[in-house]
Image (cartoon, rainbow, N blue to C red; front, side):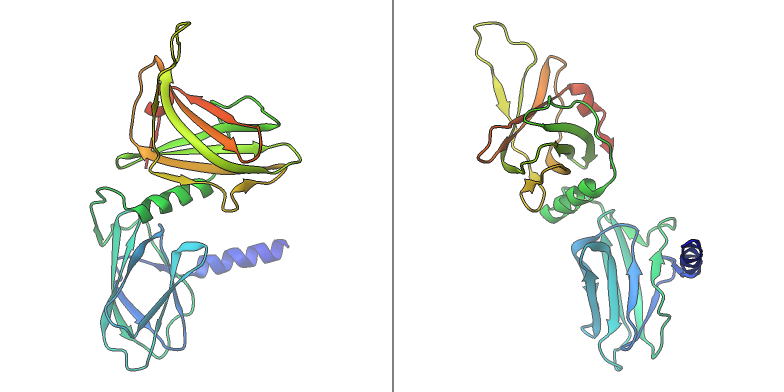
Length: 268
């Protein structure tokens, strides 16, 4: 096993680091060129200058692009890639009978060929960022809910991107029964409400929600939930509240977030 690991490291060390400054890209009809970018490719972010440039993305790897020449008569053209970190990669393409088969890793340390102003995030960009946040490593933190029916929810992180806040929550199911997500509510309310006074809630509508793909959390498992909403702050006298409800069940989860947590949002 140690020899296999050492061999794998040597192979990685020998892979070409494709610099952004190297703008000429040789393409073959018999060998697939694989480009690995330091950030996910935007939805619709592949622009081919000629139809003989054949491109395809790898399912589950949104930062990888496969490129080939569709014919031996492919003329000189260009290929432009837009990534979610605001970078634009532009390559001059040329047919070649043979090209190196090793993947090209775009060097993230180089200056970008160009960079576009992000402005308001599109729906596809919001979905991409939410997916990245859900799959990123993070530990369960505080605040967290009380255990209800062996279910618990905790805040894993708050991230700011443009004019949006992305909230990541860990939901843990320590029971032997699956938890089916039904619906959620977000609102702002006062931390202290005098007796005999109606509780005033200001509802907040999220821009995007990302639950587990199956819509449920299996018994004895943990899953991440991500919400995106317009950037906001709250006074020290208020709570930002998230409630998640179970379909055909009675294990509602309610998490109260303070203003200081919102102010500590990490800037992406």
